[in-house]
Image (cartoon, rainbow, N blue to C red; front, side):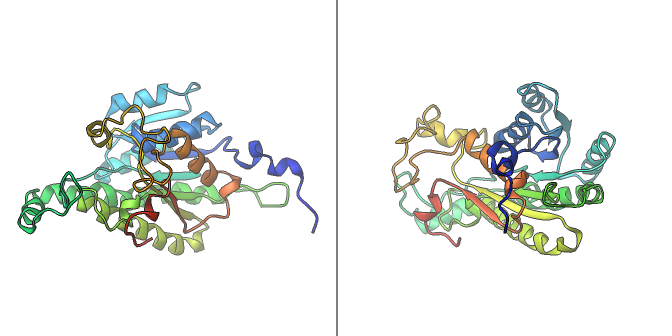
Length: 306
């Protein structure tokens, strides 16, 4: 078998996302912001970011020169809002290469251990589980799981449109098939909860939903993959790092002990950028139905079902 042209395996070509059209929900902050910035900074033509806070969306859009990040205010828990967002995107582009269903919330705190990581008394655990209002628990599922379901449903037609305009593949010209990427979490595998039971359960649901879609969408040539992050510093996790006095050092090796995170640091924007660029480029075109864990080895040192 003849070897491929060396140029095709150079990083600049292999991880190229020039011209990509993407939608990223929850793109105004946290992991969504990291992913949107990575795509825009590396040549994506349009990255639509969706969220409820206009100021955060604009801040992210302005952080990358060129105007390729387009902020759209919307709510993934509202079908009406999702339909309106879809129409806004459709008015500007005729297809979608990548949909990143990333919006998420942490949910109500339900501590199962004390500050020394010892189990709380059973009476206290019962009180902790009883304390949240049902609406607080169900809202976690509404954003993290139901929102993903309807976000995907809303944008399937534009993902399908990408296939209709996809050039016939040959050895010199290959465009990756369109793709859904959901944001799961190692919390979906971790059997030691970090204080919010509904969050882990919702992320388990996202992971399995995406696996099912990877199979269901095979006839339509649309891929589906999950990114399952571990400890990353973000607006959502700020309080945890602040309590530990690690907001400024979280991604420096040696900040955490190896029994907590084998990498001894958190993930950062470069780590997340590497994952999203891989999945969205030719380098990741053969990936489908996969869960990409980016956690510095965290699942290796906690009880998990992964």
